[in-house]
Image 1 (cartoon, rainbow, N blue to C red):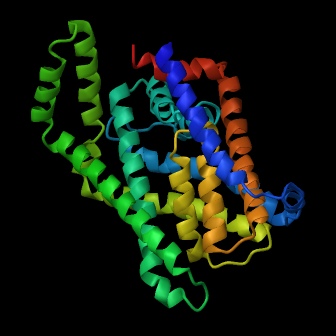
Image 2: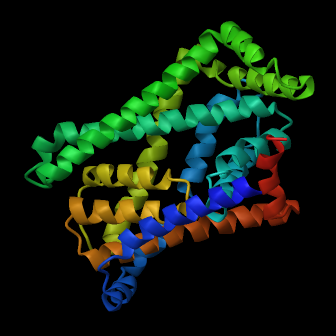
Image 3: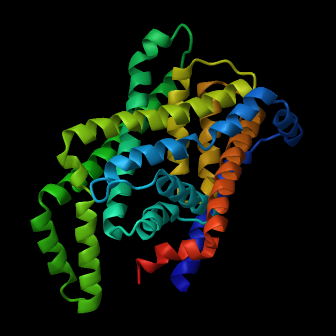
Length: 342
């Protein structure tokens, strides 16, 4: 109980800190004025595009899940994503990343550890893909400069953020590949570490870890790897397009490639484990809008509030709809993640 309160306190402090910097120096009258100054046609398109990433992620997930079971229904994969992201929006700690695989494992009678392994692979490729788009922007910036220029200090910061992203994703990739290609040695090491623990508990952890390693066997197929890389580009180009429409909704005309670094920054903010991405996403979105595009502070705050609200509302409507259809409460689906730690 004490650990839970400490964790919640840290999350609240983190969220409050980011929100303070997000709202600092804001003129609320201007913010409310900008909230309504939106192109209705583009705003409707923004709403319609909000669930697009759930569709593309479901299609991409197929090339990982098929290593264990073929013919999984599209609905199961879509529902798993919708429910998982809904949990992320409602509860702190990004536990939806664990709910997603456990939901589909239960629904399709698959090994839990295996499906969790696919989510690790997915997140690694998400980071690599956005680092690629950011790297493309940074390399091509001299060519784009006549149409869209970036301040040198901002460019330097983006450069270092990109290096950190690539380094982090590379480290994860090395760990994951080592787990798979040296799995016998890894499993022996895990068994040795678990030896002092109660047999029932150590056997459960060991079995989950073996299933997890099996979830990485996707790396054995070069063809699947290429398809998965291509689908990762589709996922993130769809997300980039969604944010591009946001600019048009607020009467800002910018080239598509200029949105690459902005989406990278929102990804950094969204990865911070605050409830519903609140705080981290908001601060990094405002930072990107004001530094990359020199958007007015009050307009940047309004745009961020709107795009976040659209994502939360549309995702939760779908997530809640699926849970209602299946007769499951949000607290029941949250307990899926708690069950793995028992």
